Length: 121
Image (tube, rainbow, N blue to C red; front, top):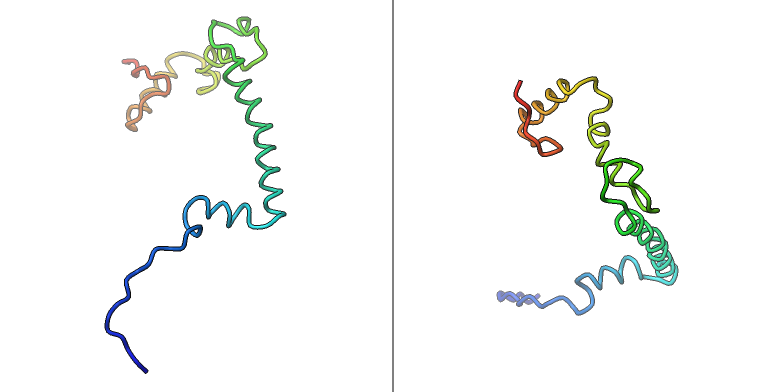
């Protein structure tokens, strides 16, 4: 048996076996059935994402003070903004209780959710 003491230089990988295109080809388009399911999944994703973006951002109501200001067919961010404290803390009886919540945020080293500093007590 013959042994070669020199190391052979490393060659680059063959074209088409590395990179994102090779991953797509090997995992999502490696046969007719997988290709059909991949394209069908992308189409369903398109049918779900485009109307959601349209509803949540493009047709949304952004300006106002109450739910009555929500006149368009999109999401009512006005209502969410007006009720943000209730969504985050629930139906607490007074602002004094919320001050404790804000202090807990600061003691743990986090900023409060609404960006305001904790009120002094």
